[in-house]
Amino acid sequence: MTTSAQPSKSDRTRQRILRAAAKAFRQQGYTSSSLREIADSAGMQAGSLYYHFGSKEELAECVMDMGLAGARAAAEQALSAAGEDADPLTRIGAAFSGHLGYLVEEADFAVATLRMLHQTPDGVRTRHMRKQRVLGRFYGELFEAARVAGQIRPQFDLSALRMLLLGALNWTPEWYSDAGLSPEQLAAQLTDMMGRGVRPQ
Figure 1 (tube, helix red, strand yellow):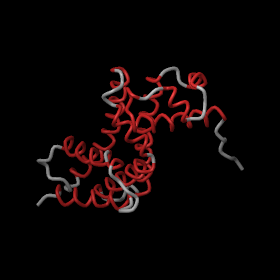
Figure 2 (cartoon, one colour; figure 1 turned 90 degrees about the horizontal axis):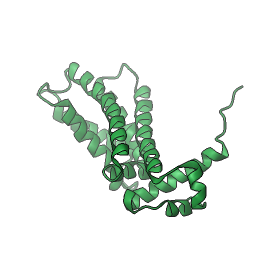
Figure 3 (cartoon, helix red, strand yellow; figure 1 turned 90 degrees about the vertical axis):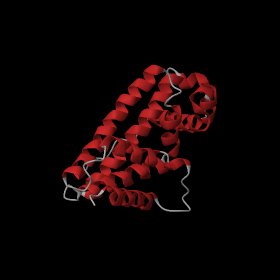
Figure 4 (cartoon, one colour; figure 1 turned 120 degrees about the vertical axis):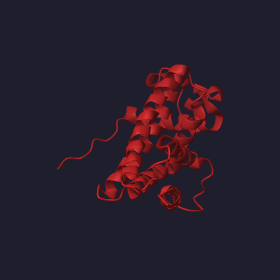
């Protein structure tokens, strides 16, 4: 029987730094966060942090990459669970549910990514926008399938619709409270509102 490899000490330390950085970037933004403060929060000396990340710019890009990759992976997992036979709007709702569940669970990464996007150096921002477009194409294919199936009115601009809905999803951690609806319930409501609004009359 095979067992999954346990993360190394270096991997665990790296994850600890990334979580401390995501929290700092969420609360203070890129410009106002210092590596010394992030190292203190991670329980290490600032010099030790440089063993894992060569600069604040590199650390910020890794935080943003984790936020984006985590949301994409969660959306894909939920989509796979829904099955290929589900109708297109149901598949969009499943992807939304997984995406939103990740954003709420990993709110520091999600909000830090949004908050830092226009604060980071041009190179970081350009690379991140390129990666965001890959996620956009993932959702674009789902929306196009719904249009082909006759579930979205042909006059709708799918790009604008996608960005409006993903914008609503991505900002949810800023106001979400676990005392209210679950991420799954919120995603279902968003999908229902979308479905009622975009279906042919």
